Length: 144
Length: 90
Image (cartoon, rainbow over all chains, first blue to last red; front, side, top):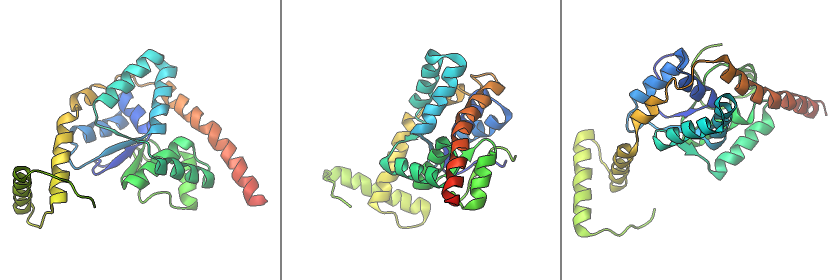
C-alpha cells in the first residue's frame, strides 16, 4: 500500500504485524517514524485487550504486560474507550457478522474521524462491506 | 464554549501566538485554535517515539500470532452468521 498519512485507528492485526516486524508492519513503522504533530493514532480499548491476549498466549503474561506497557508509555497511540465507542461497537456487531475486535476498530475510527487500518482483507470484513458501507474508508496493509 | 480565566500577561502571549500562526498560515486564527496548537505541541513533547519504534519486530514473525488472532475472531463470526441468517429467515 502507499504510505500511510492522516489520522488512523489501528486494528489488532496491524499492531501484531508491527510487533512481528513483518513487511506489512514496516508500513506502520514508517508511519510512526514520519508522524506529523497533527496526525493522531488511535486504538480501541478492545483491540488493546486483543493485543495483550495474543502476546500472552505466545509469550506469557509478563511479556504481554511489559510490551503493552511500553506501547502505552510511548503515548504514540491514544487508547479510545468512550461510552459512545462501546455503543457503536455493539451496534455494528448487531448488524454484521464480524468480530467485536473489528467492530471496535471501525467504531473508534468513525467517532474519531480517522481511518481504520487492518492488516489483511479478512473475508468476513469484505463480505460485510459488500452488504453496507462500514466506514468512509477502510485501509488494509495488504490486498487479499 | 466555556470561559477560561487567564491573567493579562498570559492573554497577551496567547494573542502573540495566534498572530504568529495567522501570519504563518495566512488565515485568521482564533484563540481556541492557538490553544489547540499549543496543546498539540505540549503533547508531542510527551510522546516517546523511540520507545514505540523499539517495539518494531520485538516478536519474531510467527504464523502463530496470526492464527491466535484469527481463531479468536472466527469463533465469534461463525456464531454471528448463524444468528443473522436466522434473523433474516424469521
